[in-house]
Amino acid sequence: MLYLDANASEPLRPAARTAALVTMEADGNPSSIHAIGRNARNIMESARETVARHCFARPADVIFTSGATEGNVLAIYALGRDRPILVGATEHDSIRATAPDAIILPVRSDGTIAPETLDEALAQNPGALLCLMAANNETGVLHDIEFAAKSCATHGALLHVDAVQVIGRCNRDWLGMGASSLSLSGHKFGGPMGAGALIVRQGIEVTALTKGGGQEQGRRGGTPPLPAIAGLAAALGEVYEADKIASYRDEIEEFCINLGAIAPGGTAPRLPNTTNLALPGVRAETQLIALDMAGFAVSAGSACSSGKLAASHVLTAMGYGDLAGQAIRVSLPWNMQAESVEKFTMAYAAMVKRALRRAEHSA
Ligand code: PMP
Image 1: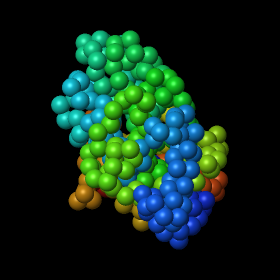
Image 2: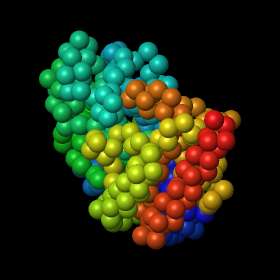
Image 3: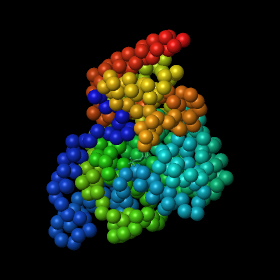
């Protein structure tokens, strides 16, 4: 099986696996006072320093969580209290479901938000919380966080950045630009599942949603998932070959466009590893199944818990209409090999050929 679904979860980095296994063997709870507990605490604090360094933050501002869903929810509760909340139309469900009454900022057809749309919405809602993802998980489209942060500063707003898809791929100093908080998730950059972090700028109070033993300075109760945290930190230290991955992505995209696919978001600044490919008239589910049977793991829209596919809210917001149910996401993993490009394009071509034949029969 060729895995091309890195935005759902990057393959585990060997260094992360080793760090997680070593930590599992070490035993101990970081809250315990004895030597074994102190050793566990050292592992956790060293991981905290690594996360802080990669995110241009202070270790004290890093709150370990179970992942980015928890980080996003915690951010909205901590920063959004008594403020109007603004969210981009293509945000992740963890944001949209936690702020169901939020004011939605529409995106343009390339998936970005017009600067004047953002500025006007912030001007009309002074002191708001704006939730904006650094990169979209379905299209890879990057939002202009620097502009958003400046606009937030002008209008007395706070900015929460869902940085899940960019951390480990193209880190930037979002806090330095003026963001108030950042969420990240270890398994999205080659760490194990089960650990993530919310980073909150000094001076912003965070009240725990899970109250209990006072862990994370009272901001997140519960024993932290230490092996996953150690793995997360180890994965952050690994090199990501963005240019190489982007060249593979571009080759795949160009090939598929030549066969009739449309690439939503393809003209906007994007993550290096992501292409969204809509094939007019062919349901996403049909494409996924055909590729799955040919040995390729890709994804589409959002899979709900029943395993059925709903039309992508991201492409719908970009104005793609029926095509929102006819697009697949190909997201290349960090360990993508050059020969996999040809393997995938051949399988895609075979799928398109079959779809055309079927369309001819039914015409
Ligand atoms: N935000 C974005 C942009 C994501 O892609 C995801 C994962 N699909 C999440 C948040 C949630 O992350 P986690 O799996 O760690 O809960």
